[in-house]
Length: 241
Length: 295
Image 1 (cartoon, rainbow over the protein chains, first blue to last red):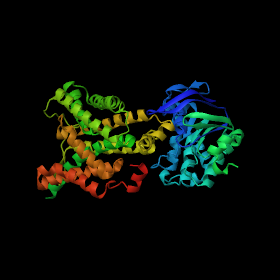
Image 2: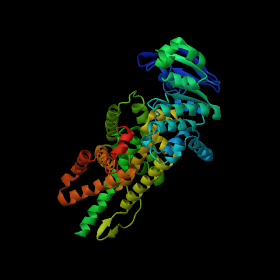
Image 3: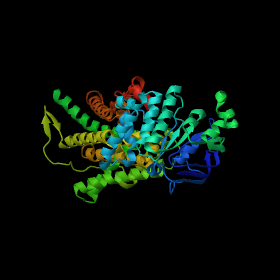
Image 4: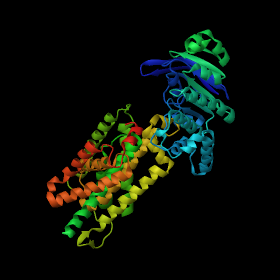
């Protein structure tokens, strides 16, 4: 569904991504793991159109999205949950969700948007309790849920998640990752999940790529990666055995 | 005694409304970009002078002249944004604000080139005898100014708080990255905010010119007063700019009347300084909200 072919990205003068190719099949969860500074976020930003790749091609379904504007990429069906949630802090929870549906907000869509907000509240009941509260006053985990809910409001076919468990207590991080697996089931979403926490990402993923200083080092099914000695040593840390 | 007081009050409210409109203009752009557009005052001047041009020089009908004036101001803002703000590949607000100063200087130059240095005016919107309240005289045009200001403010409030486009515009200033990622065309929103604020400024210029005349170099002073109004209420807060503008207008008029007219312009600056010292988030802003915005 999503295909990157020989993509090169410069971040200022830094050659952040070097000839990276990857693909995500429809309905799959693919994990992209790697250390801090490996270029994971840069890659996601480029898919969403916030950066332009120097070379290479990115396609989604039948469309070439390499040079599309971010808003058109959202329209194609790719939504990103950015690193650290990036909710609109001085706005209410409900306004955040409304803005998530920005690209399809027309007068005729009002009822379906309302309905989708209710669905997000059903998925994350804590957001319903706090719908009038300013998003900036939510806890880190709640902000992450709001960011996921906001991304879902665009009715995406594919979700890009940038370190959704970053900075969260382990129990909340686990809850969020479980929720992502659940949403894939429920909505038939395709997911590209960027994580530093390789073990928990691979637990819910079908397959994965390991990115190191801008290059794909290893790729394979989640089980293969979990069993791979290099991956264990470098990314699964002390609980490798 | 009371008569004199009322007279000062009314004239204060009239100028104050225009300060409020200029303040609103600052807020609109600030709400979308966090930029302070210091060319804001020039759009008021453009409103007054172009209105004179369309009405008196081209002899167009009143409503057509109003429409053309507002549209032209919007067009100037569009050109300004596309030519000077958009090509800047920077996130440095200070640089962008300096650019607006440069634009203001160029606009002033062009206005002087076209209109010269003399003041312009045209007839009040409606003819008729002024009202007399408690012995104080209120020109009918004053009522127009107050009414138009009120309408603009309500319309802008509704736009920013009740419509999805308005909320999207605010989202662009809170977090441009996230705004792009939910599909808001951020650069188009910024352009639109410049157009909208120029139009509001021009409306103020059209309304005030029959009362206080308009000349090419009135912009900077209007911008300073409008900025004080916006700061006083807390940048980005609509009702703040209104209260700020009216307060400054009235205090100015009282100072000029009871103390000395030379001190008039100092009032706004004194208020600005005290606000910055004692309540930097403005009378209506609160510091916690300011923190959520991240600046």
